[in-house]
Image (spheres, rainbow, N blue to C red):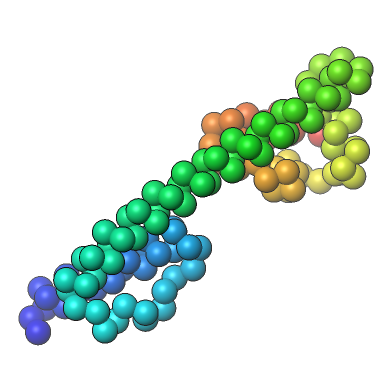
Length: 130
């Protein structure tokens, strides 16, 4: 086998490994080493669908968890919190999260701080726990 073929095969296996991790959260560790080049290309096509499904699921989950967080904040406002920051403080107290850092609090609520709405919530939590 020439170096070009070896490099192409390694690139295909690397792509599959990355896509598999994106789709399933773990690397395949040798599952595809015996596949032909055509089988590897077909696997990439199959994994593309899995990755797209995983992304869609993650986006729906993020939206749901942000909605739950905001609904709970709204409940505390309805119960008398003067503003959103106070409502967040009350909510954190109710969850025994008063002295934790904002990243840990986001983690506990399932808020993804790497998306814009999650980053906004992270900043609100940081301001509320000062």
